[in-house]
Every structure is written in structure tokens, then in C-alpha cells.
Length: 556
Image 1 (spheres, one colour):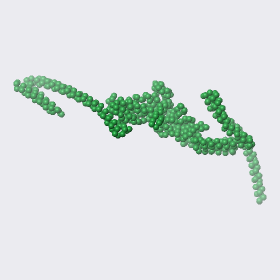
Image 2 (cartoon, rainbow, N blue to C red):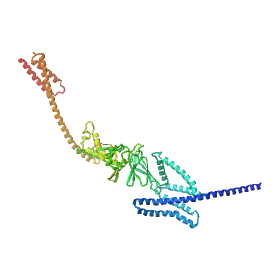
Image 3 (cartoon, helix red, strand yellow):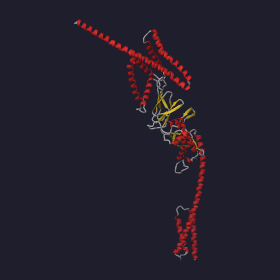
Image 4 (cartoon, rainbow, N blue to C red):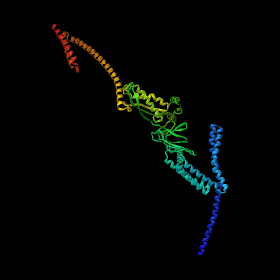
């Protein structure tokens, strides 16, 4: 039994050895085939490498030659060749010479892997904004590629490393689409740009990433710092749906947004344009026509003009402002809530300057200009009005003083703002306050008393004139009323006498006169709120008249 088992055991070993020999021959044949493929791939990759180096050496030289002349281009081409000859020597020539010197096969390739490792670690360690993300990404990719190279050189990289990297970057793209904001989730171009920005962040090669501070902010905040790298990546600015962003590009600038905006190298945001109606308030000092100073609140409501312009309006505005040459129609964010014209937005952002304050020099933005013009208009309009005219309409009694002031202020500045692409909705002055917070209480009281005294003198003079005119008019009306009443009374008496004589021709005169005198006495007694002196005088006159007629009747 033991012999049989040993025989079977040795037969099994023999069969296994034959299988190994046959399989090894096949595996050897396979690796012989891949070695040829690796050799051709190596030649192809080397050619691609040399073409890339040539491109990076000649491209800037050609640009310089085109801009500054042929000789400048040749000079910089030689300079770039010398510059690129250093990495070519280190990466290609030196490893090859060492391999030939020591007669060790594959030594040049392993030296190059070592050079890539050292250069990558140094680069990502020294890159300011890469942090540890860049180093970890480099080491992970380096380990995968080195492992695949160890398996079967270029064939290993193609069939092992590249499929795994494809899966990795596909997952990274899905993560980018989920965690990054979007303006148009279905836009393929936006998806591609978001993935590139996220990829640059994972490698630490990102350009700065910006975000608007708030929905009312004028500036954007740099959330993630960055800098240009050897690979061209875009930066990103995120704004709210009602915000357009100004982007500088050297001496030029453009306007883009709202939503996600991808910006290239050397570009950065510098100001935000709010596309909504903007309301700004400020408190200023004003002086009335009668010399009294007071505080007033100025309110301005305005926006970037998004109204349709007629051909005549556009021709007029473009003559005044060349920036509005392309601003006749809205051409940006047409599918959004706040469409606008890029030309008008550029004109608005150009309407800015610098002003000096106690703390130094600072930027004065376009909306500050609008507020400043509204304040100046308020001072000019209020300087034409006296104190009482601040609450009393001067032109139309049916309207208020506030409406007149608003209309006059708007007329002063509306056209000037329209030239810069700004539509003024309203500008008004309200809340008049006769107090100076910069003075102490005692001095404030003295100034107020002096101003009130000046105003009181003028007010009393006007009141005296008004009262004198009223009294004169009252006396005139009373005199006219008395004369009219006297005339009416005499006419009535004469007509009454004629009617009485016609009815009773033989009736004595004194009887008729006595009847009229009695009627007049009753009228006098029935008059309400009559002056007692006048009543006594009227009664005395009637008694004398009655006595006269009684004496006359005795003679008859």
C-alpha cells in the first residue's frame, strides 16, 4: 500500500511539473509579446514627451515674435531651449548614461521613477495652496502607476492602472456634481467646468474660489485660496440669482453671472452689481432759503436700467457714453429672473471713483455716486424753500410739498444717471430735524434760539402783513354791506309806500310811516349778536323819526 501511494505521489508531481513547464512557456511567450508592445509604447510616449517640450518652448517664443518682432522671438526661443534642456538632461540623458555605464538593464527607468517621486514630493510640499491634498493625490497615483509598471511596464499601466483611474475619476465627477453649486444642472459645459474645478482642488492645483458674502454684498469673499499651476485650471465665483459680477483681466474688465462663473488665469472678481431695485438712505445737512440749517433724510431708489430702449434713445445715449454702444437690448441671463445688458452693467461699474476719508483712500462705488448726486440735489432744492415751504406746496395747492421736492430732485439727476445705464425710480427728502448732534447742549440751545429768533421775526412780519390786509379787506366788505343794505332798505320802503298808497289812496302818510317804523323796531330786536351801541343808536333814530311823524300828524 505504501509503495502504491508513493508511486501515485511521484506521478502527480511529474504531471504538475510538466504543466508548469508548458504554462511557463506560454507565459513566457505572452511576456515576450508584451515586451515588444512595451518597447513601441515607450518610443511613442518618448515622442509625445519631446513634442510637449517643443511646444512649451516654441509657443511663447512665437507669441513674443508676433508681438515684439522676430529677433525678440529668436532670443526667447534660445532662452526657453536652455531652460527646458535642464529637465531633459536630468530625466532622459543622465539615466541613460548611468544605465550604459553600470550595464544594468532597466536602471534608467527606475532612476526616472525615482526622479518623478522626488520632484512630485518637493513640488506638492512647497506649493503654498496644495496643503496635504496635493501630496496625497500624487502619492496615490504614483503608487498605482508604479505597481502597474512593476507588473508589466506600459501594458500593466494600460490594462491595470488606467481602468482603475477611470473608475476613480468617474466617482469624483459624481461627487463634484453633488457637492458643488449649479446654475444649470443640465448644462454639459457647466458640468465639465465643475469637475475640472473640483479635480484641481483635490490635487491642490486650484485657482482661487470665490463666493458672494451675502445677497446684499458688494464684494465677494475668497473661500479657497489658490494660484496658477503648470496645468491650466479655472477659478470659480458663486453669486446669488440677482447678482452680476465684475471680473478684472488686467486693464480690462467684463461682467458675468449670476450663478456660477468660471474665470481663467490672472482674473478675479472686483465688484458685485445688484440687479434688483436698490434703496439707499442717508442724512445730510441742509440750509433753507431763510438761513436755517436742519438735518434731512435723503432716500434714493434706483437700479441697473433693464427697460427696452428705442432706437432714438440708444443713439442719444451712445453719443454721451461709448460704453453703451452694445447696450440697446438685454443680452445676459435672459432665462433668469433678472435679465440685464452686459454693456449697461459695464457702464455702471465704470461709474466709480476714489474718495479720501479720515482713514485714508477708499473706493467709492457706483451706488455711492447715485446717493451723492441725490444728496446734492436735495441741498439745491431745499435751499430754494423757506421753512414753511417744506410743508406747503408752492405750485399746486392740491399737491403736497413732499411731491414737489421729489419731482424737482428727480428732474435734476435722472438724465445724468441714465447716461451711465442707471434708472432712477425716485429721490426724496423727508424727516426734517432741527437739531445738530455735533454741538453740545448749551451751544445747541444758543444756535437754535438764534435761528428761531431770526425765523420768528420774518414770521411775525408776514403775520402782521397778513392781518393788516385781512382787516382792511374786512372793513371794505363791511362798508359795502352797509351801503348795500341801506340801499335795499330804502328801495323796499319806497316800494312799500307806493303799494300802500295804491291800496288806500286816502290813508294818511303818518299812519303808513308809523307802520314801517314799528316793523323796523321789530327787525332790530330780532337781530342776533348785534352791537348794543348800534342798537341804541338805531332805536334813538326811530324814536326821533316817530316823534317827527306824530307832530306832523297833529298839524294835519
